[in-house]
Image: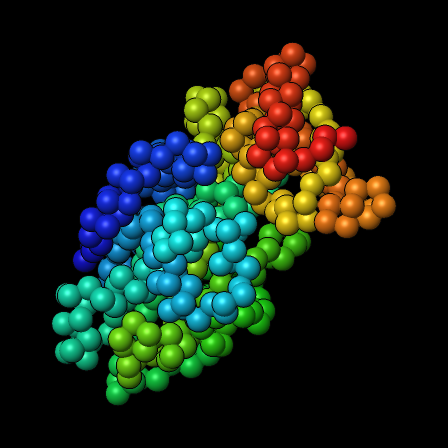
Length: 376
């Protein structure tokens, strides 16, 4: 069964957002306008979703489509995130207002699923439940070839009445192994490591061995009874899992840069097939520029990475921290110095010094304007 959650509240928020022109609102509108690659048939992320849904243990699961704008309390409070958890910070999560955010994780689908009227009937009839969810999620993040602030997750939830079966850690491991073997083949070597999530206990991550290295693939756990109770569900138990689609795509095709998944270059697009080892169509040269400034100690690097993305777009391949230090005598007790190295590189053409100089000058001006810094 496919469940599409009503988005009336989201649409109302979007109307308000459309009338705003501040930097953060414009940024959020751009993020929401970006395509969901997990639903784009030409994308390898779509194929990963298709392959996962065909795994035997997940074949009969419902599929739920949830809003991209979700309430703060639903995303964090109901999932037992501590009041001081970093994910709640405005330097980690995109806030539209004090009550609503861009969804930072797909686990929020638990709430929507368990409160669906058809699912409530199943619960009343003491039936088992299974659901998957996939799509874009949003988190402020660093800039390099492995990270973007917009990416895609896929997660699942399986629950059974306590009166029918009480699942244990071995059931969780068996489920995770079946999913991993369904994606990587029966011969894949794997191992489990203990992990911690606010909403599952016990919690695990599963790694697979690839080219002699252990690589984290997905996390999983058994939903906490108190979290399920937050959603109005009692006397059920089960397991859950989640993973990032980009990570699997990068591994499958040996992609050197996450930005390639969004490329419109036909030479790139035709290579984006799972299992196909990507070959550079042309390695365009990088141009390096540094920027250093003195700023208030309240400065958040993640907010700066957002500004770089606003000004430079995806021509910024990497932003690396060269130096940070404090000197009360030189800068003042409430100030701190940062120095960043920005690697400019296009995936589609050779950038000129003139183009980069223009972008970098604009970045300096915006850095001064937005963060009230002293450029050094």
